[in-house]
Amino acid sequence: MSKSLHKDICDKLRFSKLYEKYAQSMSTILYYKYGDLLNPSDKVQDAFIKLWENCAKVAPEAAKSYLYTVANNMMLNEVKHQKIVFKHQEVKPKDYTNETPEFMLRKKEFLKRYETALSTLKEEERVAFLLSKVDGKTHKEIAELLNITKKVAEHRIYAALNKLKDQLEELN
Image (cartoon, rainbow, N blue to C red):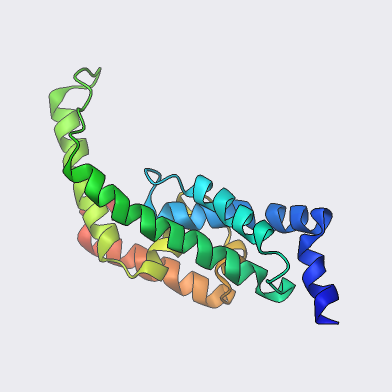
């Protein structure tokens, strides 16, 4: 019987539905955890390729966990690689803008403080907060994406917001 279950993921239609169900949310979560620079969407694609290659070995009920683990591990490997690349590479900023120097300075200072404040949040608070405020997801959608209850999602978002308000007076 377990062999027939394993064949379910190898079925193209079921695999396609699995992709439709999880690809976007996985990409979003990886984006919030690691940023856009590391191409989270590519890692999600690679995770699905790896699942397809190993579909006979992965039980349907373990597919979601398998995908998230593989994609997260790929991102961690990319982080290690990028640390080495950045040591040997200099990124040149653009040398023109239409904004005033004062505005640019205030914007840069605020973004730096905002990123610092975000980095002080617990990972689960930061992910829930960004899913809510940047992606516009509902508390229910966030709860489903993160496999938590709606109340836990609400608590994480509000805790993150309160911590950010404490650190950034512009948010009050």
